[in-house]
Length: 309
Image (tube, rainbow, N blue to C red; front, top):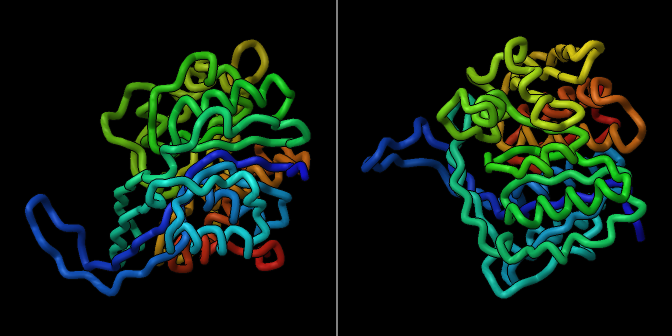
């Protein structure tokens, strides 16, 4: 079976603890009960797309353990193809997540089985319309996947999270680069902090000043997510200029931003696979991300298509 959307990325068990505040170095803070939920940037993106009706498969790896079974059950229950998810002799990846009352999170990822993924696992992209990758799996896997699929004429999308240095060839093979503000600034060398999957909140790259520089790195389009402020879509304009489209987000009360960036990316590639422009796909994606932050968890928070207004 050939899926319209192929996702290359991680599958993690999210161990989530609510806390009044994050502990400082050397400090112990008491939190709430631990929740164990399906997550991982790759699995999240695939589930978000599948719940919106996309025909999608995940290329990834899990361990032969309870967390791996939790993830496979969640993927299959959402309609994600799992034939290309390997079961390997390493523990399933885990993300340790602290969520504060304002809905913000801090995340520590233990990759585990995700780092068993190899370039050979991403062969045979023929028939897919869009490939989307993120960076909780080995970098050589992602770069190989983008190179192979771009040669096949498949649209390539990369969510640069967590940040990592990519080859010039990989950036030039991208149709769409998705970053939050911190990731954009990191890529341009203007921000020393690591971008996090918080939907793009906080200060970072200035799109007016840096849009051309981002596009000069190679991608045909760049989407900068800005959390509650929506997203900015940058494409090449006439006479070497940059066309910029601001996409506002619905205003909601956030309770948990975990996986909001993945919800956005999953929605983006769903509409790209259906033939939408990057700007139109981003408009739908901000709506999906906004819904996701009003519920707890990552995959459990993602809406079905008929839940969108």
